[in-house]
Image (cartoon, rainbow over all chains, first blue to last red):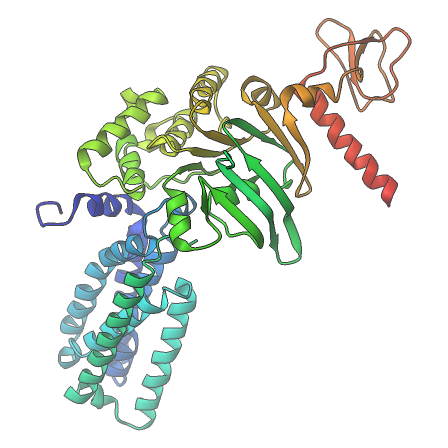
Length: 198
Length: 291
């Protein structure tokens, strides 16, 4: 990682995040469940895949934030930004969740065209989650986003306009939300950096 | 100007309707300060408040001159001056002693790998784990893990070291070694530790604070605490049924704490434990009388 340009102190944080195998396993399991449901419900496989796939990175990040931090109390009393640690940790399971879910979209018969459609909603949800995590706890944030995404998805299904997700307009909306959330996240972390937080 | 390393000014902590720590004013200066009290007395809450790992419900906390309750920036500045050993440290799996401490050094903002590694080796030597640096933590004994956890709190020689039951799991030799380390720190900073081992307090602490039911019941020197029990601890040939505690010692004599001494009883020098037990009993008596 150092050879790849990752600073030594960030490598030390990542190395200490050995508990990250849990969000890693959860992300792969969720991707496999998504693949299983998609292939066993051929009439609804696009709905199942597009509903679940964008939530897999959300699950991975939630677990990375909440479940795999055995040293939380010790870390709290140190000056380093907890948000920075969390971001670094989230990057590790995301590096697994995104390619695995995409691969499943490619491999499962009948999903080929949707393999990449979920990426933009997934990015949008994940960046929004990182932003909301600066206020809320991991599972509250994940729950709120899952509920929000289900509502949006349900509305699209009810209007029989699910295929619009694949349109460049919809993809642009998700991209725009992701950009706004990322900008807000940068402003938020630069202004408070969550250094000194409890 | 106050020379206190930490100040609690009207600090309290409640969880819902349960008061874990009642309104408390306290100044902690240089030296080793022991917190004694039964389980649930509020010791860990007080330590966590001082270590900035928990926000108070009311009041101000200052650490090394920084008002940690005022702003995040002040809290961060305070955290640069303190080391904290929680009651239980769960180690990340698969790490060696060295990599764990290297990680904590990163958390403490040691950016340069060279100076970080030097500091890691220094604290490993300090807790006598220098030869275990490359061992996986899972392969260390319970006592060695506790010393490793202690080592992280000593990194960077902080002004304030907060230790929650540091002697738990240590054998007598290791405890003696720990006493040596902590007394060395006392000259240049403040060590605040909680313990159930009254002999540790007697051996190590300049000052002792007894907490019970979320409030300070005693705050003074070890000598002052022992003095509260003077004339109330006796040895006799027969058991003293009115005593708070009474037991037959190895010499065959019965040692009793509190109560009315028997005819053949001789007063003996009390220990910290005797004084602590009497303090607790007095409080329970007061509570009973007030009901």
